[in-house]
Image (cartoon, rainbow, N blue to C red; front, side, top):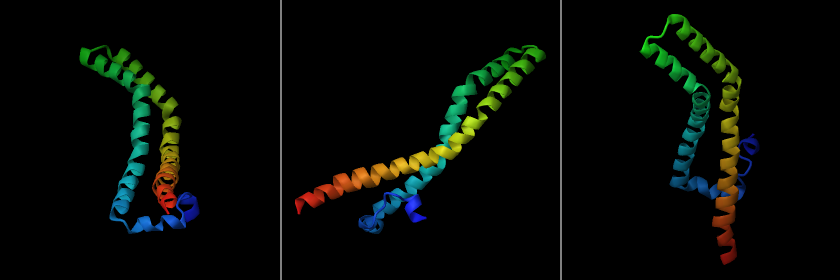
Length: 123
């Protein structure tokens, strides 16, 4: 299970668990992984339907007829229903993609290649 969740964490990385800054980095990372899907999904929905809901608000403020307002609101709800599956997919796949991307960049590029790579060449 650990191999699946942290595929790039190797035994030679265990020294990082003793560092306070690494534990703080883990907490920040977990907060970002939890929040990022909602932020990305919200941005997607806002870009896809925000203009429509602003139009409905404009109709409300200007005092348009009820039938025009209802039609605009129903159109916005239809657009929202059409993009909902994509927004839900983003909620699921965003943390998975971000998790593996961050793990790869941190452990393979930063720790192994940059930090430990210089250490290995100096000995």
